[in-house]
Amino acid sequence: DTRAYFSAMTIMIAIPTGTKIFNWLGTYMASSFSTKTVDLWAALSFILLFTLGGTTGVVMGNAAMDIALHDTYY
Image (cartoon, rainbow, N blue to C red):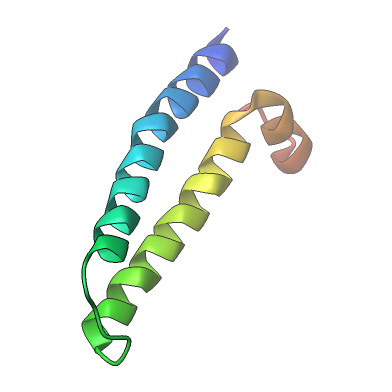
């Protein structure tokens, strides 16, 4: 069944991606930074959007949720 394959692959991709985001945030928290720089806010905005996109990808990776929300198999 292709639904099971794509669901499993989506979840397997999400785990290392979550680790990457955790490492990025750990790097920012360990460094001394100023909240007045535009670069910091741009980087944190990217991480936030990346995290939101990853969360929706994991939700849609669940075949049952995908069918319920999109009414299709893919």
